[in-house]
Image (tube, rainbow, N blue to C red):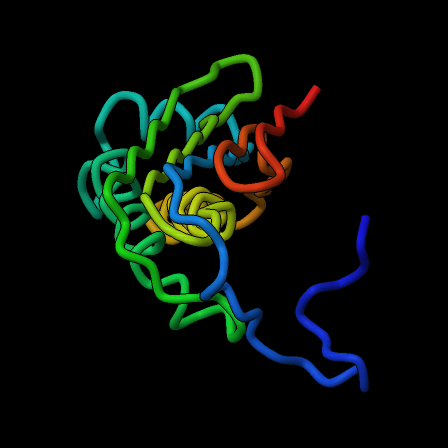
Length: 158
């Protein structure tokens, strides 16, 4: 590692200058999961949530979250995002929902933060939509599992 790039030589926070970086195709995938009571899982999987289709709303929220990342994370660059895909998979073994978010762009900086934001906002939306029946839900495992593009190349989590 070359150190923390969001601090200058005096230790002050700053936005990284990416103007000299090469424009390349960039992609990142992040994942997390939300665990819940079996009864809550049944309500969501059977489409009985009072607020509506939990998975569809969470998918849209994740997409919106990716697009707003620079508004939420102070030193993120605003990016022209080419694609956001948010997948929510019901997992009865948790019980809960596994969430994966993939973001693509062509630019001078990566989209890891956008993928992480998409996954976390989708999970938060599931919590919001089901909290009336289960306040003990737990969001875990948020991490980048894939990053491609740019000078540092490919990263894939083990």
